[in-house]
Image (cartoon, rainbow, N blue to C red; front, side):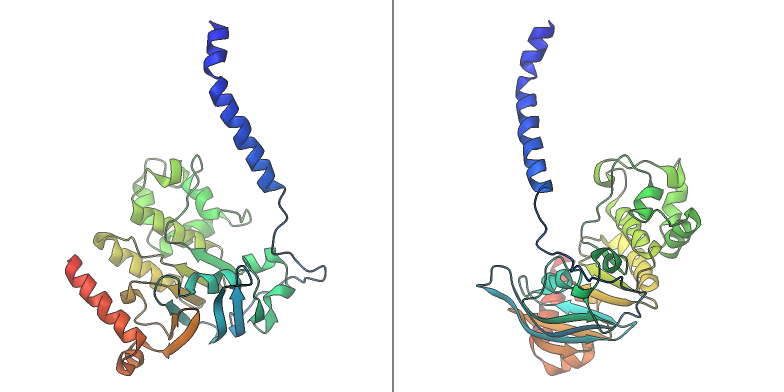
Length: 293
């Protein structure tokens, strides 16, 4: 019987060996973005962001962004909008140094992001993605704390309360100690997104990035999510990437991108009056919302 069992498990063993080999290949890769030997710690920032003549290409052949000039003041909420492939996500990826600019500079409070350590840069920025990633086998408390072990339980509870997540957490049998299933499968999507918001707020970031954070929210959860957003955006610089334009009507500045270039900038009302690309996007969004309803 042991020999038969070992034979039946041979296929699984082979797959595990191939997977393990691939994992070690990835771990051995050198990162494309590296710190300078002289990189300094980024001090606590006010949140001013400047894209100065930024251009970027992934393969040095096809240009993704061309001559981007954007100024974001501390505490402002700025939205990046445009069709798929316009360069919205690439702009925030460059800010977080997932890639480095090909030409130009990105500065935070006048400091080039390439001149600071990656860890100190990441500590200043929180991102809420479209699909919140929660870690299975860990508690809600640990998922909100994430990679910041110095955050106290009191701070975590305060963040959860601020975004309205404390209400459903209190109804769970084990509260903040509730263990999450794979990708938070024992929570609704709206609840998972509120956990993601609490995680972002608990780190007290100077800069917040929302990447389609409300794209998959159902109508029932939208009001609570919008309340959470208003608290989340208070007193911090925020960049919002959105296709659903209802979430950005109150933004201080809306940057419209097309084929890797900035084609318009302004407030919601000003851009509608202009009658350009943003007005077309708004008309399309309104007609889609009516058809969905």
